[in-house]
Length: 170
Image (cartoon, rainbow, N blue to C red; front, side, top):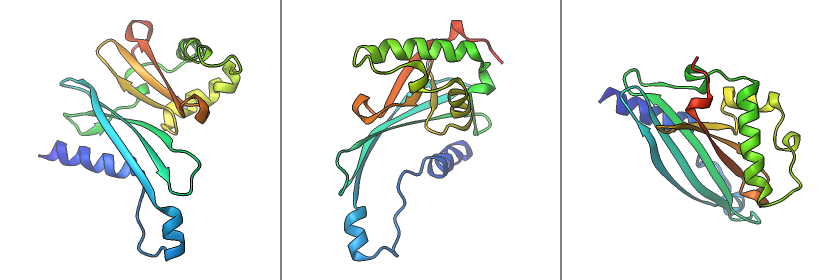
């Protein structure tokens, strides 16, 4: 089926976590050995949108600790095109405020050393959402989830869900 093949191509091209190389020397091969365990769940499956959340860990043999992975794929099953946040909702200061308010509530349970600006600036947030560079979005029936990077001690990424009723459709 065309749509399934297109979805597989998108997953492989956009979310390729580790690529093997036959040109790696034996010495480097030992250093680069890694373990990856990624699971997925479908957070929304409708006629116009399929939202998939990938969650897992990876660890290089020489690393001090494993790193948590988190990324998403949002696709229109009719067209097999990816769906971005800005395709569905307005990305503005209000979204940033909703995100940081909820994020800081979650983080304050773990530490009081994180501030809004140390989490991410408004420009970093907006650019990150648009480029999906360490910021990822997923959809549910009632909310949109946003993940952003945080220090390893706090889990490597932080997820916040914003109710759809608080967002403006684009």
